Every structure is written in C-alpha cells, then in structure tokens.
Length: 238
Image 1 (cartoon, rainbow, N blue to C red):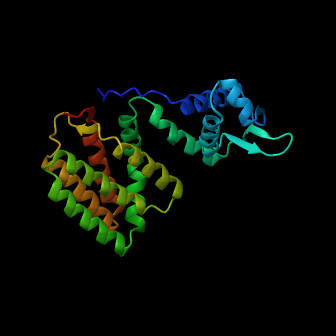
Image 2 (image 1 turned 30 degrees about the vertical axis):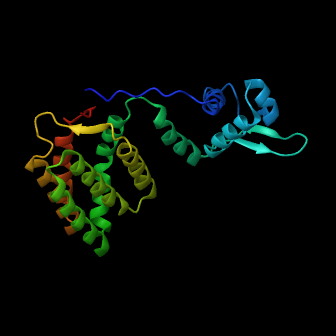
Image 3 (image 1 turned 180 degrees about the vertical axis):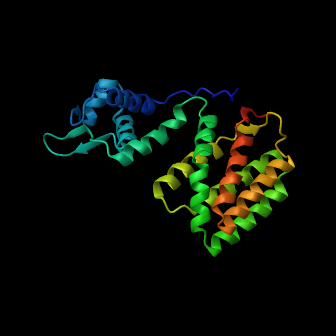
C-alpha cells in the first residue's frame, strides 16, 4: 500500500508556541489547572512577540486546552478538557499526521453498515429525491476518474446526512470532509477498474435499497461495497 507523500511545511512562530504548550498538556507535563503565566510572561519565555502569544492562546482556547482568567492572579491556565474538546481536537490534529487519508477511508468503510441501515430506516421523501438526483449525477460522471470520485463522496455524504444519531453522523461526515479536502489523494484499484460497471452497479443497488427501506438488501449492498473497496489503494495522483 502506497500513499501520497506529505509536503513538509514550515511552522510559524504561532504554531511553534501552540505546539510546545499543547505537547506539554498532552504528555502530562502541564497539568489541569496549572498556571502557565500571563501573555507577557509567555512571550518572554518563548522569545516571541506578545501578538504571537495572543494568537497561540486563541488557537489553544479553540481546542479547549487552555483558559484565560483576568485579575491579579489571572493569566493562562490549563483547562479541564471536555469530551467535545477531546473529540474535536483529535480531528483537528489529523492535519498534522502523515498518510491519514487511507486511514480515514478505512474507518468510513467500517462505519458504512450503520450509516446505510440508519438511512434506510429514516429516509424521507426529500431524502429519496436527493439520493435519486445524486445517483444520476454519479452515473453521468462515472467514466471520469476524478469527477466520478467526487460525485461518489457527495452521494455518501447525503446518505450520512439522513442518520439521526448525531455522534455517528458527525464522525462519519468529519472523516469524509477530511478525505474530500485532500485532492492529492485518489482511489485506485487492484483488479477492478475505477470506472467499472461493477462498482457503479453496487452504488445503484445501495441507493435503491436505502430508498426502498429494505434493510436486508441494504446490508447486502454494503457488503459488496466494502468487498470492492477493501482492495483499493491510495496512491499519488498523476
């Protein structure tokens, strides 16, 4: 299995300060509730401008890792992470991990049975109409490797939007958004051409089963979908 090479990027001063503090929190060197100092003190400690510290603090606050307090004993403190912050931070950190697109595809594939079954059970008339339209779009673009793949992601995204379970929907859509955002990755095949009739038929069966609400047919279509994708690789785009 090969993956597209990640392009190294130079870290800004903001990234460096934020990463240093975040690593200390994640590794347990900076404990919950501990005072890191004022912005001025942190600027002196890291040898950067106060504006740089202010931006790093903003980034870490958005991740739920730190909190700020005003007053004589105020400053920047390590926050008690919420469950939402832990999950959200994990997704944010995917951008710094090498070769994660294929990992995301694998997890998406694992979640597919639950997503498809929920969609088959809860689809509305509006959902059915959208799925039919997106399937036609998939048929029209299938012979184009890139356009067909993007139409495929749009179809799967719309299926997931039907899911009433907010955790399942959020995790699935977040992973899908990550994969979609990486144009340097594309799905290749190991024996079945990417634009083969077999793959298109599987998607037609899946959409048809969801629209009809047939849970057994949905399960069969998902199994076929997973079997085909299990042999796919993520490689460097030409």
